[in-house]
Image 1: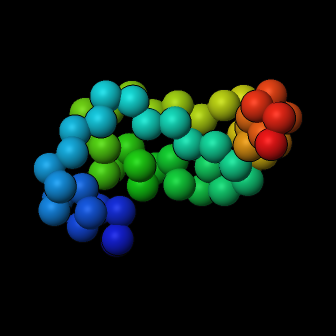
Image 2: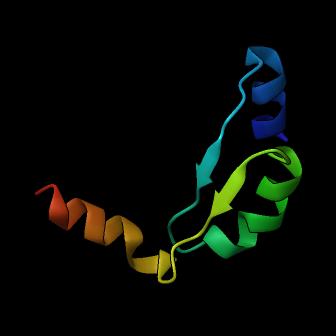
Length: 59
């Protein structure tokens, strides 16, 4: 995948991966595989996470 290739190219190590939005649960398992040493977080209501962030920051 593009994400996996990008991580290899840049040698990035993430401690935490936050996945938000409507497709968050669909990507959770792939994120666990790609970021095997990272903590993966999906908010309880991930579908609303982006909207809440936009509202909070006044976008």
